[in-house]
Structures are given as structure tokens and as C-alpha cells.
Amino acid sequence: MKKIKSFLIISIMLGASAVAMSSCKDAPGPMDDPQPTVNFTMVENGNFENGLAGWQVAGDESAAILATDGCDGEGALKLTGTATVSRSLSGIPDGIYSLIFYYKNEGGQPDCYIEANGRKTSPAVSSSSWAKGFVHGVKVEGGKCEIRIVSTTDDGKFCEWDGLRLSLTDKDYFIIKGGDISELNYVEANGGKYYQNGNVGDCLEILKANGMNLVRLRLYNDPGKYTYDGVALPEGVQDEADILALARRAKAAGMQILLTFHYSDTWTNGGVQFIPHAWEGQTAEQMAVSLHDFTYAFMEKMKAQGTSPEYVSLGNETQAGMLYPLGGPLDGNDPDYRTRCQNIALFYNAGYNAVKESNPESRVIIHLAGAGDESNYTWYFGLMKSYNVSYDIIGSSYYPYWTENTAKQACDFAQTVTEQFDKDLIFMETGYAWSKTIDDGITDGQLNHNGPYKDMSKLGQKNFMLELINEIKKVPNLRVLGFVYWDPIFIPAGSAGWALGQKNIVSNSALFDFSGNALEVLDAFKNNN
Image 1 (tube, rainbow, N blue to C red):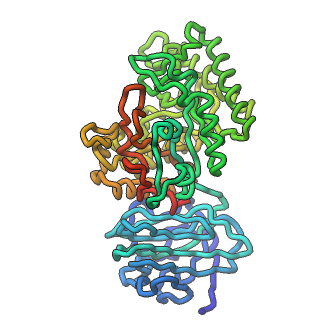
Image 2 (cartoon, rainbow, N blue to C red; image 1 turned 90 degrees about the vertical axis):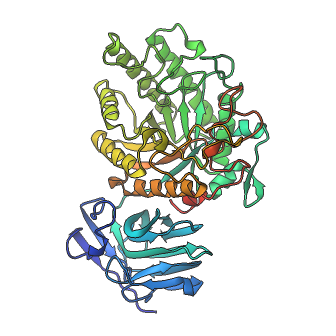
Image 3 (cartoon, rainbow, N blue to C red; image 1 turned 180 degrees about the horizontal axis):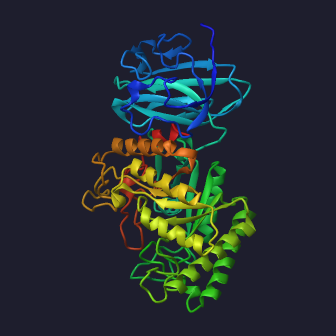
């Protein structure tokens, strides 16, 4: 094997002629790295100008082809079958790096990813032009780094690689790949079963094995006993006992928890924020006490069973407020606007204090819908600042269906608001329909199109998630922590629907098919971290 060399170039302004990437000028996005001035280590022969010198090939050696349409020079590595191409680097200064690479990817393979010391990225589809990708949080200890490029396919689909280098960031990063499992017990009680490769299994174990690392749990105050706008939730579902049981299952599976307090007995969003039955008739000050005590008491129950949540959302899609009419809807033309602003600040701070009193390490989220609506986020979080509201993270719902935004547009928006308010952001909800209708073949799903994305198929769902993950990793300073998929587990099961007597209208966008079989979209979860 050729002796491996590595060299450190300190404080190079990327985009200078020292790094020849002119063939990649058609790559989407700017050519500079997330930080304008960085230290980086070139991966020797990471541009494959010397063929496969220094690289080892395992599997089908004929699948590793030297292409001549390179990005960094003429050479590039093209994988068209099942093979792993790897090399070991040494002499690298210890620290945390991002592996930067350029790629072309036809898509459709079970596996197509690049890995460095256990951190990996599966690139989005870009079959005709070079695109730029990142593997973040690569920890180098003892000067060593193992790089692996992996392809698994039996139909000749290609992925191509070039221009590898390590950028010293000293910032750890492990992307949140979450899913809302709040109705899992409900589905299972109605006969729902989950399968991987034809074998029945525990839903959470299947998701964990495929890379999901966080679950979202939604808590209602007293669901099922009262009707709101003619709708009632099933009793015993998403109440305290149910959510505590799901939290135990999630922790047993080794997953983090994001807990959402709806502060209602029924569904809440920007249009409806019904006060819990038990809090009706209270003043804003009394309701703030009730909210604090309810939040603290449940956080203590979570702590007592060893499941304190890593993240807590105060309300769900509260872009116009919560606990209407005391805390919204917020309207600048309303004569009670200032009073409602004061009330919602009172409610948020009561919830924040309760969370921190129970578990100071839990990070508190304020969650709005409409990722991409920069003006609304600027107004709302500006309001939070002016009323001295405490929170840690901006939460944002991003659906191509409702926003008509691409993943890049959503992440460009995320970059803007994280920089403006100096807060991290989580995409609290996202989803992609792989069928227009639910399992009856007649009824449209809640998501019956995908906005700017026209491929309504199971592969289209996977490609969207690959695109979203890669766009998240491109956001400078790593301020987008990750995403939570909406109702990934809500498969058809008996009479289970979004409310009593209602159909399940989200089965067409789940991560399992109508029969409970795990879909190929989970490859995107598994091959990114």
C-alpha cells in the first residue's frame, strides 16, 4: 500500500485557487464552507487523480470504476454495484471535523453513503451535476480517521465521489431523526402490526434499527371525555398514562424524547387552541399557575420513571398564540392585542419555569407552523423577545404540501431565523405522501400532494427525506438540529382514526405501507447521522 500522507493547510479562505474545484461551479449553493475561514486536511488521493492508490476495495471490485468526469480534477470514483471503498488516514491533528465531499447520485440504491469514523451521510439525488455534501461531527482521536464509501445495489445504479477533505470545526453534531409515535399504543390496540423484511417486530425496535433516534410524544390534559367542534379524541389515548408508557418504551429502545404539551383536551394548531375543560373560567394569572403546576407535575412523573425528556414543546403550532381567547389568537387590530400578548408571555414563561424546575437539561421549544414564512417568524419571535419570553429552540413545521417550499427553501429560511434570533431550530413536523389516497383507494389523505415535488411514490418519499437531511447538513453553523416525521407509525388498524368515528387520513404518508411493512424511506434514516 502506498504510504498515506496528510497535510494541514491553516486558515485558508476557501474559494481561493489553492483548492481547485472549478468543475464544481455548477454545484447547488455557494462553494465556500460553512465557516469562511477554516483549517482543513486534504484526504490524500481523495480526488482519485491517482486511481485507487491508497484505497481498499471490498465486495465486487468491478463495481468500483474510475470515472473521468471529475469535480476536483479529472478523476472520480464511481460505484455501480455492491462494494465498499475505504482508506485509513493517520497523522491528523485531533479534533472534530466535517468531511466535505462532492457527489453525483442516481438514487434508488438501498445503500449509498460515505462514512468517517462512524459518522455518515447518504447524499441526495443529483444524477447529472456535481453537488456538495457534508459528514459532520467526525471525531479524530490519536490522529486516525477511517473513511468508507459504501454502495449496495444490484441494478447498476451509480453514485460518484470526488474532492474529499476534512474541515476542522470542533463542533459536535448528531442529527435528530425523529418521529411522532403518540398513537402507537392506539394502533397496536386496534390490531396494527409492523414488519421488516416480512418479519413481524416491535415498531420502535424496527425504527431504532433503521436509525431513528428520537420520538415525539404529544400529551393532552384530559382527552376523550369532552367534545370540541363535534370532535372527540379516544379516551385513554395520549393521556398521562399512555404517554408515560410510550416514554418507557422509547427509553428502553435507546431513543431520546421530545414531549409536546398541547395544553388542551383536544387537537390544537394555529386555528384552534381550546382551553382544557378543567381550566375554564380561570383568569390569565390563575391559568398560568394551572399550566405551571400541570407541566411540573407531569415532568416529575417522567423523571420518576427515568424518562425525563431531552426536549419539551410548550404548545403545538402556536403561531397565533395558545389557550384562546386569553392567549390569542393574536391580531394586531384587536383592541385586546397587548393583553393577549402579555398573557401568552405569562403562559410560556410559566411552562418554561416548570420544565427547568424539574429538569434543567430539558431544552424548551416554541413551535410554529409554516416553515418559510419568514415575516411571521420575525414578528412572532420578535414579540417573544420584546415580552421577555424564555425558550431555547425554535420549532417549525415543514410540509411541502402546505408550504409549497422545497427542502432548500425551508433550510434557507431556517438559516435566516436561527441567525436573526441566535437560536437552534428543529423541524418539528414533516411528511411526504407516497399515495394520494389512504388504504381504501378512494379517500384522499391529509397530504394528497407534495407541493413542488411531483413524484408521489415510495421512492419519491425516500428521495425527499434524503434531500431534506442533506439540506439540513448544509445550513451554516449547524443550527438546524434535525427533524421529526409526522405520524410515521399510523398505519390502518381497525377503527383507529384521527378522532372518534373519523378515518385514518395519514396512512398514505407513514413510514410503513398500508400492511405495516417498513418502507425504503428508512434507508435515509439509517444511512445518515
